[in-house]
Length: 346
Image (tube, rainbow, N blue to C red):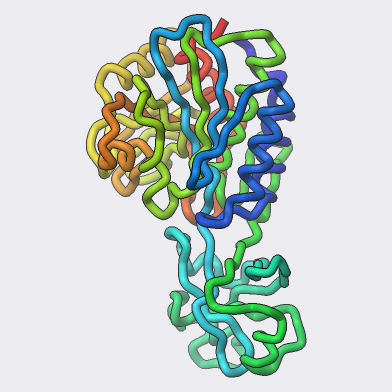
């Protein structure tokens, strides 16, 4: 099936999702966006107690329960403490590469609904002032948030309603280039989530149904390690759609759909993975099969929580994960095409 006509819509879906702040634990707005998107297409949705969004897509048969899962929670920061001169010390939410955050714009979200802009900076931020401006470690102890408000003390910051435990959301700096690249923070995994949103549009527009009753799950705690713990237990197959790794001795590029045979949690289901490889090969998709050395997915968490489900992992190749990420339309298109083939949509 030719889905090239959906390039603009895919990038629009990605941009809209990427502009919604949703670090792990602060995903309500992203969940509402996803639920509304699916509802407008006529699909039934539900939200789990912990906040995962589940979209129900009727199949042509009900003999097997199939699920595709992407996560929409992202990396982020949280206020750890307030300094005497009115800056915010930080703690990580998930695993952002902290040196890449030096100089990034951010938004502080208070518990009472207020928001303030700021900049994440080294505590030695000026080369004209500090001898160690270039060498001071960019870590949790060496970075702080400079708030864009007139504050000179801890008390001034507290008067704004900012407290320890408030979220610091990093500006994703999303750009779509004329050459087909999507570059942004948090393509892991909003790039894959956008693929599933666009997949829903393809099914709806063309009147297609998957072979089996299918659920699309958008999990909201993957980056902190327990997103898959509450995935429904009545599944036969679980296809995780998450970013593909690029670099070192891996073969995947940003233009391909990556099929993961094994990550740090062990091998994925042999039969499902082999079937995905055969579908990609037999249908002329640009794909790669790789081992991810420093990676875990919602499937691993589901297995460790006791889920008796076969699972596999695919996704568009993403460069510079947990930093300034980039992928390409071709990789996202190949990922959607493989999802459609897996679902046997017609």
